[in-house]
Amino acid sequence: MQYPIGHPQCPVRRALNLIGSRWKVLLIQHLSGGTRRYGELKRLIPDISEKMLINELKELVGYGLAAKQAYPEIPPRVEYSLTDKGRQALPVVASIIAFGLQNLADEPVAA
Amino acid sequence: MQYPIGHPQCPVRRALNLIGSRWKVLLIQHLSGGTRRYGELKRLIPDISEKMLINELKELVGYGLAAKQAYPEIPPRVEYSLTDKGRQALPVVASIIAFGLQNLADEPVAA
DNA sequence: GCAAGTACTTACCTGAAAGTAGGGTGCTTA
DNA sequence: TAAGCACCCTACTTTCAGGTAAGTACTTGC
Image (cartoon, rainbow over all chains, first blue to last red; front, side, top):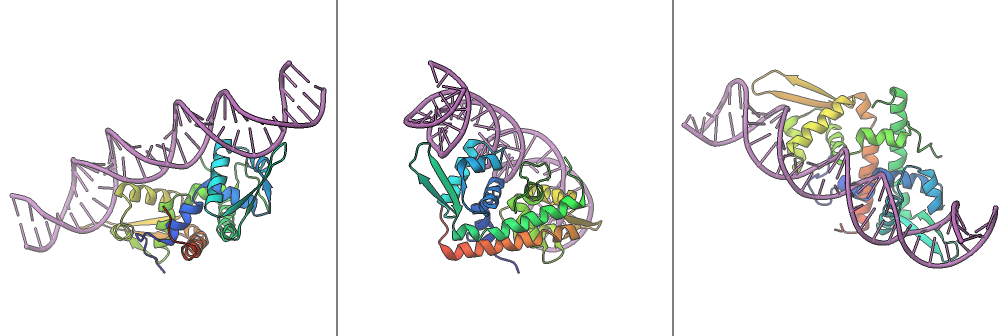
């Protein structure tokens, strides 16, 4: 079944607007296990820059996919978790991982 | 379950390398119904530029996700279809559509 | 006193993705 | 005579995702 691709509310485009970056997919994957702190995510995704980590988290929170809980302590503690809406994206992440695994088996990683 | 994100063969990154652009997702969706001609795809995705259409199709063929069949006729006829490997990506596309539909229902499209 | 950890912000810069614009072929229809 | 379809290719340009680097505020530990 096809959807009206050119339509302003095309579901594919709508979805990609929300989670269409590699960092968002990785972040949602890591948040799927539960609440994670800022520094934890940074360690889990070593090659993301601080700027991108902050930006992407801010966007996820802005879209209502993730929730941010800040504790006014010293040193500061900030925790991120998926909202119900964010958990709706988990099937996407799961299928991406499944597809990636199939293709890892298929052939060696090419440049 | 988490996978080694920094790992060179991280399945998420591998998958996004193959189908991580909006055009590829849209093209795979439209090829899911069967064989499609070049001009047909162009009409189905009105706002893709010719350059992008050619480029993305070429990459899909290069990755082994799609097959190209050219008929040396006048006027020329070129048909594209998904390979078995390309069909492995269909669950990703399906879950993206499902997620997009859920979020269309949630709220109006924001700028 | 100085580094190190925690959670950011700001400014600047680069490189790749994508859009724009035009060319080319070889036939058909008006 | 030119207009149009179908299937591309090439060069130029813009836009944006993303990286680099530095600063903030406060505290603990050597």
